[in-house]
Image (cartoon, rainbow, N blue to C red; front, side, top):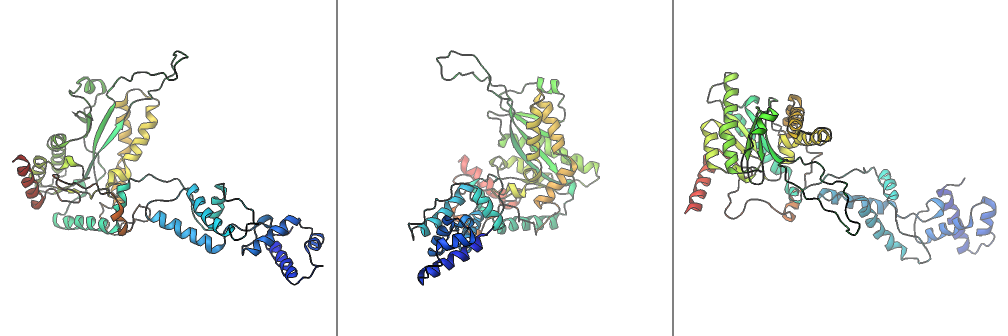
Length: 432
């Protein structure tokens, strides 16, 4: 059986003979000698006339090597700016090029690429990988390697000055949990109605969990924030949740008041207990790493942290998916387990406790700090698999930094004298 290279060679010979008017060496003659379908030869001739390589069945190759290289470069650029093209978008890019050369010879009747199967073959030829994309908030494209290194350098200076130990390096963050079960049911209704509605009764199963972990691999007392005006006392008694703290807010999310209460009644007592247990002096410095949520800018909480020898550092805005241990290695697994367990168990507080214990195992926490580069401090953090984009892309991104009357806390050391002075002046200005 002849391969495409053989057909191309024969078709080239036919074209040469026709130009030199050598009639015996015609398509008919070739067909008899080599037993090739006449259509293949005609298609191969047309491919040669428009300068295309001959593919299978004698058809013109849709793209040559230079054109495929051009597409590969374009795909790399799109991936670089955080817009990895889908299979359909790749087909559109290829079809633009194919359309341009199809117009050279209208006799070449060839449909454009309509199937994604071509993309799989294209990826294999050019050593590309087809995978499922991960969603990325548009603001996160402002993350650059330079900004990450600056934050890690700030941590390095603090580490050298305060000589933190792993027991006293903490990361706190809250995660929102939607624990309602499926609210769609099979119902009976009048056949004249197109839709049937069933009123959803609020059941208080949406909450926020404020989780704190240490670089040593420990998980501190967790605070659960319920979306209620008053705290249901029976929650403690029915579920035996003595190792949890509870708070309420209108929407079930953390605010400045709850952050202050967490610092005063949960975090500082836990830090003091660790110092006593390990026989550290009372003035042994601790470090708390947080994201840039507005609730952190509470002057009372910051003064308390400073008085108890606790430094508080805020991760730069939109960097938490790279630099925050809880986001890097705990919360994703926690929510996956929670989703699995909810299918089989009714008491969601017990399910939450079980899944949180699994997600905050010592090994998982230590690995999370290591991957985030926070402890041990890694100034040469491997960012190959992280969504890091060139600095030039920043100007195209929406910035979600604090504006107007709000004080910018992103990337700041909240317990530094400089920041406390700024925050104090800001609050005085707001009160006047």
